[in-house]
Amino acid sequence: MADGTVSSGRGNSSCARACEGDHDGDGHRADERGLLAVAMTENVFRPVAAARRPYLIVNPRSGGGKASRFRIAERARELGAQVLLLDPSRPQDLVAVARRAVDDGADLLGVAGGDGTQALVAGVAAQSGVPFLVVPAGTRNHFAMDLGLDREDPSAALEALTDGVELRVDLGYAGERAFVNNVSFGAYAALVQDPAYRDDKIGTVVRILPEFLARHAGPELVVRAGLLTVDRPDAVLVSNNPYQVDDPAGLGRRAQLDSGLLGVLAARAETPAETVARLRGGQTQGLTNLATSEGVVVDAEVPAVPVGLDGEAVTLPTPVRCRISPGTLRVRVPRHRPGVAHTGRPPGRGAIRRVASAVGRTVHGRPPG
Image (cartoon, rainbow, N blue to C red; front, side, top):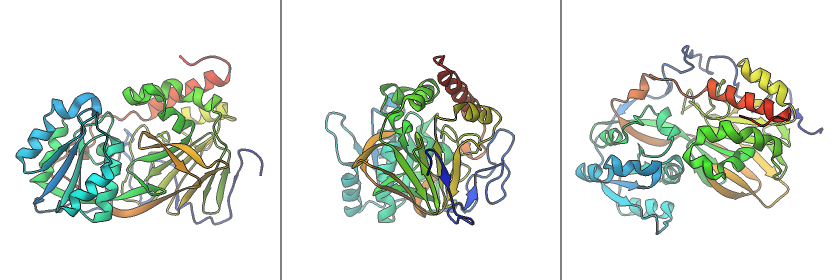
């Protein structure tokens, strides 16, 4: 197969639905801001009794100390939760901590921190069958955004301890590691390793992703999804539910968290001019962009590859087998959430166009900026 080619069989069942147009696969129409009026199309919000023994893990450093500013630990204790305040000088195995909490009788697990920490504990919650509480005390908290939570006031999420409803959402896995948003490979994964990424994720993507795409020299990747194969992509993003069609880089929203589909984006730097033009026009034909209910395998001729797992830099053995577990995570959220009405505009098409423009300048010999 020629470098950068994509092959697929006729009637490929892995492409459950194409990521095209402004509708999701269930016919729900996005509004003019690129947001869906109903994000959780399959879910019924079920009122639930308050947890009797909630257990909350609080990362005081996440989000520049957001948990401390909003007194998350103190407020959670006032509501009856047992709180573990992480000590940055003493790293802990949070998976083991969460499992021990369940073994000791916790009937709800929660995390006040970023998406990477959320994913670790969400995997334990799903495996144990207990509900999971998301307190958006990180830098971006994309998972919380798609749940409709108030990211400006993370303490509002604690209302779910006393007046909550329950959603069932999907959870992604890369090997044995759970992810709530996405797992990235190649240039995307290298980008996560950049020191500037944690402080300004969107700004870093816009500023240096083009350079990473043009100069990335990591191991050659192969992506397989059912009958479809993508050879030697420079950047790969596998997401827990597909991102909006005008936001393949994962900077904005997902229309659903309960579709049972993985989103897959594979990009190469060899066709940047064409990709730039199409992205500027809101088109995605220049990229391999699909949604699938089947597993996605990312392989390379090396024993392990660097990976960005919900924004955290890790290394996973090859081949990396990604899958989605539909409706496996019980998420406890407040009855009233500002994000359900979706006011405000996410950094979607504008940010993507800035990336596309910078890619064009980089490929034509001019530095971005």
